[in-house]
Length: 299
Image (tube, rainbow, N blue to C red; front, side):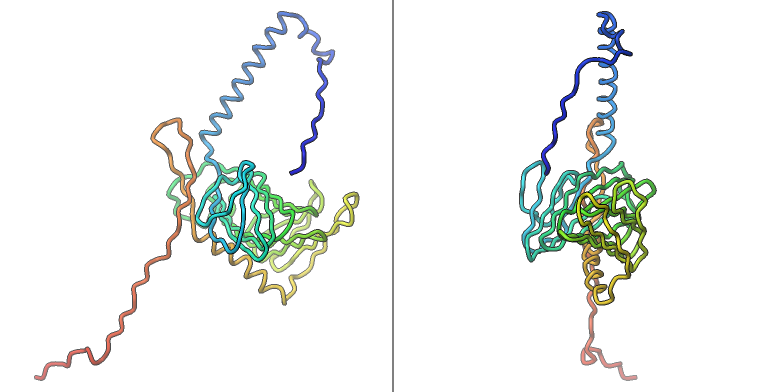
């Protein structure tokens, strides 16, 4: 993380607020500001009660991987759940893992990758949903991938949701459904297998949309120069590798869905919990040998 720059704040009021220098005006202003602060705290408290904390579920681990939660680094453990916003996930060489976010997005990581989930908030959603292929509620995701690769397989995103993944070269606005992002010091490559994404070189620009089967290569010669975006078809000899990567993310999202629980106390916050999806029981096929079939009775 980069150190925060502390900017000194100048004291004093502008001339237009000179009336506040009167003692009675200062007292009135104090109560006015106090009322606004209390209202804001009350609104924030209500929002915390109404909005369950977004979650991530670890679907699969191959090799070594770590997760940083609240400044504490620990090993990533399969079938474990964490609060998603603010976590950092890193994979070691020759390792892979996959996770599922509570908005129904599966992510598969390649070796030596690092992903920072800087923002992930989600609106409340109804428990015991029936259509698990649709995003359960509106969500906002902002993540930063400084190195490595991540493959995403999303559910059908609902109107109002946003999903932006950034690298040192640019960013990708994702509206679904299957995309692979790979980045290193030299460039970022965004490959769209299925769905709809827009690639941006600079923030607040229109960007360039991709259609399935295309990839964008983003390069930046220096920080002072605008990035260059090159759009091309995905090379045929690379398509299978990319499809295999995103298939891992899709398989991960099928292993779990998320439900909402509410404690008995009325002021308790609703909680998002992962529910593992177990494979269905298949009836074994029974083969009967013809030697075991009784002979028909003689007339």
